[in-house]
Amino acid sequence: NTLSRQTYTPDPDPVPSSSVTITMDDPSVTLTRTSSSLSPTKTIMCSPNPLAAAKYGSGLIWQSSDPEVASVEKTGTWSAKIIGHKAGKATISVTVDDSGRATAYCYVTVTDTLVTSLSLDSKSVTLIRTNSNPSPTKTLFSSVSPSNAINKDLIWSSSDESVVGVDQTIA
Image (tube, rainbow, N blue to C red):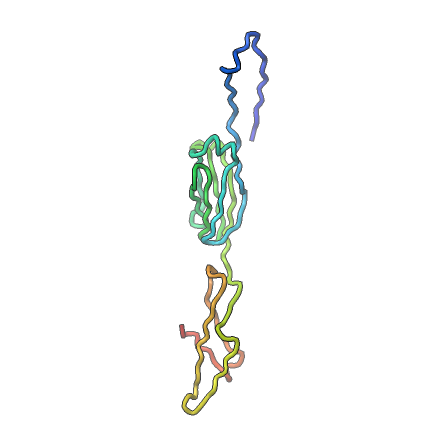
Protein backbone atom coordinates (compact mmCIF):
# COMPACT_ATOMS: atom_id res chain seq x y z
CA ASN A 1 0.00 0.00 0.00
CA THR A 2 1.27 3.45 -0.86
CA LEU A 3 0.45 6.61 1.02
CA SER A 4 0.86 9.95 -0.65
CA ARG A 5 1.48 13.20 1.13
CA GLN A 6 0.78 16.61 -0.25
CA THR A 7 2.15 19.83 1.12
CA TYR A 8 -0.42 22.49 1.79
CA THR A 9 0.51 26.14 1.43
CA PRO A 10 -2.07 28.45 2.97
CA ASP A 11 -3.78 30.86 0.60
CA PRO A 12 -3.35 34.49 1.63
CA ASP A 13 -7.13 34.83 1.34
CA PRO A 14 -8.25 31.68 3.18
CA VAL A 15 -11.60 30.07 2.40
CA PRO A 16 -13.94 29.77 5.39
CA SER A 17 -13.45 26.36 7.00
CA SER A 18 -17.08 25.38 6.47
CA SER A 19 -16.47 25.11 2.72
CA VAL A 20 -13.19 23.14 2.83
CA THR A 21 -13.39 19.50 1.81
CA ILE A 22 -10.52 17.15 2.56
CA THR A 23 -10.43 14.06 0.38
CA MET A 24 -8.36 11.07 1.42
CA ASP A 25 -7.28 8.23 -0.82
CA ASP A 26 -9.17 4.95 -0.42
CA PRO A 27 -8.36 3.26 2.86
CA SER A 28 -6.55 0.00 2.47
CA VAL A 29 -8.69 -3.07 3.05
CA THR A 30 -7.65 -5.58 5.66
CA LEU A 31 -9.63 -8.44 7.15
CA THR A 32 -10.25 -9.56 10.72
CA ARG A 33 -8.70 -12.90 9.66
CA THR A 34 -5.85 -13.47 7.23
CA SER A 35 -5.86 -17.25 7.56
CA SER A 36 -8.05 -19.86 9.18
CA SER A 37 -8.62 -23.61 9.41
CA LEU A 38 -12.02 -25.21 9.67
CA SER A 39 -13.82 -28.50 9.13
CA PRO A 40 -16.45 -29.32 6.53
CA THR A 41 -19.88 -27.84 7.47
CA LYS A 42 -18.26 -25.45 9.97
CA THR A 43 -18.40 -21.68 9.50
CA ILE A 44 -16.34 -18.67 10.52
CA MET A 45 -17.13 -14.98 10.25
CA CYS A 46 -14.91 -12.46 8.51
CA SER A 47 -15.10 -8.66 8.26
CA PRO A 48 -13.04 -5.89 6.70
CA ASN A 49 -11.36 -3.19 8.74
CA PRO A 50 -13.77 -0.50 10.01
CA LEU A 51 -12.58 2.23 7.58
CA ALA A 52 -13.21 0.07 4.51
CA ALA A 53 -16.50 -1.20 5.95
CA ALA A 54 -17.69 2.35 6.62
CA LYS A 55 -16.65 3.65 3.22
CA TYR A 56 -17.66 0.73 0.98
CA GLY A 57 -20.16 -1.27 3.04
CA SER A 58 -22.57 -2.80 0.55
CA GLY A 59 -20.09 -2.31 -2.33
CA LEU A 60 -17.72 -4.97 -1.02
CA ILE A 61 -17.38 -7.99 -3.31
CA TRP A 62 -16.64 -11.34 -1.61
CA GLN A 63 -15.31 -14.31 -3.61
CA SER A 64 -13.79 -17.76 -3.09
CA SER A 65 -11.04 -19.17 -5.29
CA ASP A 66 -12.56 -22.65 -4.84
CA PRO A 67 -16.22 -22.68 -3.74
CA GLU A 68 -16.20 -26.49 -3.59
CA VAL A 69 -13.66 -26.30 -0.73
CA ALA A 70 -14.91 -23.15 1.00
CA SER A 71 -17.64 -20.75 -0.03
CA VAL A 72 -18.34 -17.24 1.19
CA GLU A 73 -21.72 -15.61 1.78
CA LYS A 74 -22.29 -11.96 2.53
CA THR A 75 -24.14 -11.81 5.87
CA GLY A 76 -24.88 -8.15 6.22
CA THR A 77 -23.80 -4.82 4.87
CA TRP A 78 -20.10 -5.68 5.10
CA SER A 79 -19.40 -8.96 6.90
CA ALA A 80 -19.30 -12.47 5.43
CA LYS A 81 -19.59 -16.09 6.52
CA ILE A 82 -17.01 -18.58 5.25
CA ILE A 83 -18.31 -22.17 5.03
CA GLY A 84 -16.08 -25.24 4.80
CA HIS A 85 -17.25 -27.94 2.37
CA LYS A 86 -14.44 -30.44 1.74
CA ALA A 87 -10.73 -30.86 2.47
CA GLY A 88 -8.50 -28.48 0.56
CA LYS A 89 -7.38 -24.86 0.37
CA ALA A 90 -9.22 -21.78 -0.87
CA THR A 91 -8.52 -18.07 -0.87
CA ILE A 92 -11.35 -15.80 0.19
CA SER A 93 -11.05 -12.29 -1.20
CA VAL A 94 -12.89 -9.07 -0.56
CA THR A 95 -12.58 -6.27 -3.10
CA VAL A 96 -13.92 -2.75 -2.73
CA ASP A 97 -15.35 -2.64 -6.25
CA ASP A 98 -15.06 -4.16 -9.72
CA SER A 99 -11.76 -2.37 -10.39
CA GLY A 100 -9.95 -4.52 -7.83
CA ARG A 101 -8.02 -1.50 -6.63
CA ALA A 102 -8.12 -2.62 -2.99
CA THR A 103 -8.35 -6.31 -2.15
CA ALA A 104 -7.67 -8.33 0.99
CA TYR A 105 -7.37 -12.08 1.39
CA CYS A 106 -8.10 -14.78 3.93
CA TYR A 107 -6.34 -18.09 3.24
CA VAL A 108 -8.60 -20.96 4.31
CA THR A 109 -7.64 -24.59 4.90
CA VAL A 110 -10.48 -27.07 5.27
CA THR A 111 -9.45 -30.26 7.04
CA ASP A 112 -11.44 -33.44 7.32
CA THR A 113 -12.94 -34.31 10.67
CA LEU A 114 -11.50 -37.60 11.85
CA VAL A 115 -12.96 -40.11 14.29
CA THR A 116 -11.68 -39.37 17.78
CA SER A 117 -13.50 -42.04 19.78
CA LEU A 118 -15.33 -45.31 19.35
CA SER A 119 -17.68 -46.98 21.81
CA LEU A 120 -19.49 -50.32 21.86
CA ASP A 121 -22.77 -51.17 23.51
CA SER A 122 -21.08 -54.07 25.40
CA LYS A 123 -17.63 -54.22 26.96
CA SER A 124 -17.65 -58.02 27.11
CA VAL A 125 -19.76 -60.79 25.62
CA THR A 126 -20.21 -64.38 26.75
CA LEU A 127 -21.50 -66.82 24.14
CA ILE A 128 -22.59 -70.26 25.32
CA ARG A 129 -22.69 -73.05 22.79
CA THR A 130 -25.38 -75.65 23.36
CA ASN A 131 -26.75 -78.62 21.40
CA SER A 132 -29.79 -76.55 20.48
CA ASN A 133 -27.67 -73.48 19.60
CA PRO A 134 -24.30 -74.72 18.29
CA SER A 135 -23.36 -71.29 16.83
CA PRO A 136 -24.54 -68.57 19.20
CA THR A 137 -24.29 -64.97 17.97
CA LYS A 138 -24.32 -61.52 19.46
CA THR A 139 -24.74 -58.30 17.50
CA LEU A 140 -22.61 -55.45 18.76
CA PHE A 141 -23.54 -51.83 18.11
CA SER A 142 -20.98 -49.08 17.84
CA SER A 143 -20.97 -45.32 17.80
CA VAL A 144 -18.23 -43.00 16.65
CA SER A 145 -17.49 -39.42 17.60
CA PRO A 146 -17.68 -36.77 16.41
CA SER A 147 -20.88 -37.31 14.46
CA ASN A 148 -19.57 -35.35 11.47
CA ALA A 149 -16.44 -37.51 11.03
CA ILE A 150 -15.75 -38.24 7.38
CA ASN A 151 -15.11 -41.97 7.60
CA LYS A 152 -17.14 -43.92 10.12
CA ASP A 153 -16.54 -47.29 8.47
CA LEU A 154 -15.34 -49.91 10.94
CA ILE A 155 -13.32 -53.03 10.32
CA TRP A 156 -14.28 -55.74 12.79
CA SER A 157 -11.90 -58.56 13.64
CA SER A 158 -11.32 -61.31 16.16
CA SER A 159 -8.06 -61.84 17.98
CA ASP A 160 -8.67 -65.59 17.69
CA GLU A 161 -10.88 -66.79 14.81
CA SER A 162 -10.76 -70.37 16.16
CA VAL A 163 -12.71 -69.20 19.22
CA VAL A 164 -15.02 -66.57 17.72
CA GLY A 165 -15.47 -65.14 14.25
CA VAL A 166 -16.79 -61.84 12.99
CA ASP A 167 -19.42 -61.32 10.31
CA GLN A 168 -19.13 -57.76 9.02
CA THR A 169 -22.11 -58.09 6.68
CA ILE A 170 -24.69 -57.64 9.43
CA ALA A 171 -25.88 -54.08 9.50
